[in-house]
Image 1 (cartoon, one colour):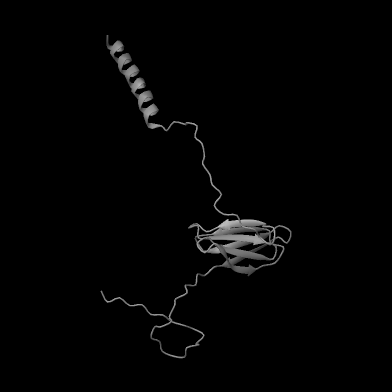
Image 2 (cartoon, rainbow, N blue to C red):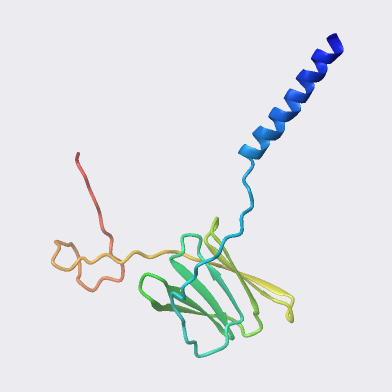
Amino acid sequence: MRNCSKRKWLILGIFLGITVSWICVPHLFPADVDWTIKKQLNLEASPLDISASVDGRWIFILVPGEILVYSVSEDKVVNRIPVDKAFDKLTHSARSNTLVLSSRSQKTLKIIQLELIHKIDISRLPFKGPENAPVTMAVFGDYQ
């Protein structure tokens, strides 16, 4: 009689385990993918490699002899970084904000540090010093 009771509990445990796993485990149902072409860039040169920033603000396009920096928000190439034509692979490191270039034929690697420059419109604001100074320092203050 005791073995029969153990068997019932075992069968009940297996049944509950299968039921819970069937409910909790995601099921694979076929799904369609909807897609839309957002933008097409026509370049002057054939792209060798591309990489995007993690936040999606920048797309770096390696073409022979330069890296094109495309701004998604401005919808245009905003900068060009000259590089040796031998480089054929490009990677962006978000952690260190660098571009890593490599050349299989030259067996070389180049790391380019990126620095963001924020343009601040200071026209019609009070300032000290000459108007055409090579360096502008902006000071922000909040006393609350």
